[in-house]
Image (tube, rainbow, N blue to C red; front, side, top):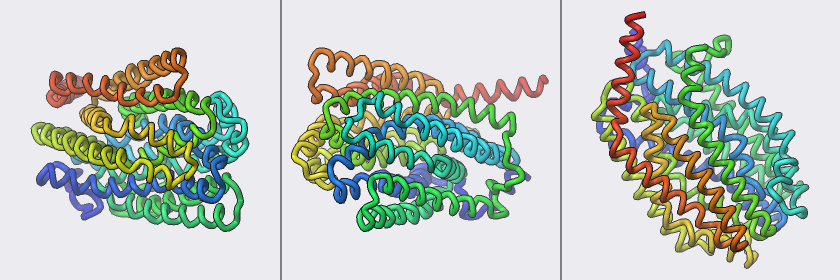
Amino acid sequence: MASISLKRQGSATTDMTKGSPYSVMTKFALPLLLSQAFQQLYNTADSLIVGKFLGTDALAAVSSSGTLIFLLVSFFTGLSMGSGTVISRYFGAGDSEKVSRAVHTNIAFSLFSGLLLTVVGVWFTPTILVWMQTDAEVLPGAIEYFRYYFLGSLALVLYNNCRGILNAVGDSKRPLYYLIFSSVLNVLLDLLFVGAFKWGVWSAALATVISQMASVILCMIYLMKKGNVFTVELKKVRFHGDMLLETVKYGLPAGVQNSVIAFANVIVQSQINSFGKLATAAYGTHAKIEGFAFMPIMSFTMAISTFISQNLGAKEYERAKKGARFGILISVIMAEIVGVICYIFAPQMIGLFDNNPGVIELGVLQAHTVTLFYFLLAYSHAVAAVCRGAGRVFVPMTVMLSVWCVIRIIYIALVVHFFDDIKYIYPAYPITWTISSIIYFIYYHCSDWVHGFEKRQKKKEVEKNEA
């Protein structure tokens, strides 16, 4: 009966174990791509509007440590990936009871994580900004901005986890609709608070918080609708021990991975900040543009993880391999096309945020250093998504920890010590992308990631029967 209840969900869910793998993955990824676009609009609107209405100092305050947000949020986002993997696996296997328990555990964990992140973010923001060598001229504005931003942590975490629940059961459209609404609302509030009222840089964060709350309300209204396998009932929201263990098992490595990458980026940001507010504004502006470039990567890697999780859960092993090959290929191609566009139009893109010649010069220098290597970034993320979908979560964690954190930090420390020139910091990214891609290539083609999963599942079944 479990499998029947899953099939009665209508268009709310997508069974990715049926139909053409290419068509199913593409249809699932396209709404994710648009969602990434509007998510990036969230992140970009503040910088774009603040830069135009309040000037370079205010832009530097907003840009001073976008990596700070990523550092504090990334761990909990990684953990939510674990719950998404668990939900996808049981959805593919047709086990509605376990899907429901995993969903309610996910919501409970989101509430706990959001409240914890609020306290940590608000309390430690000034300390971290000083540690990151934020320019003294922009420090007060940066503290205001990020403290207001972290007051909305509960909404941020809840939305990402609710979106993860819907994506895990193959619904990538509704999160898009909710995000479109909240993104438009964010832009309108930015224009009102910053452009019309001139309230200052903190009001841009307030606009973001209000918009995030709106998206969460829309998500929860739908999730609480009766009749779906993922229906949320408030009285059932609690930690289910077995589901929490599985979530942590699959999500903790991803959380650690995200955190170490974010930590490495914080090191990079602190070195950039030491070169002054123009360098800070340029680096932050390029990060906003790069966020759009990453959208094809993130949309298809999310599709890869969901597709593989569902198909391995349904024991469709050859189909899982076929989907992995397609997802990796399309991610690489799309990322490189975007990279070439960013390389060519870098001056115009940077100029949209700030027409200061110094900001444009540094932003273009960074773009011309990294954008043509986006295909390597895409490959690394795509193979990491394959690993997560197959339950090999420690593989991407190990690679990212050793390469994107340790090697990147060592490289930056050496070039700053010997050259003390900002142009030598930018290559840290393509160099580490290259190394990680080589490692992933060897692992993907030499390991038995699909049948290794099959063997582990059979071993669990034997142990269960013996018990």
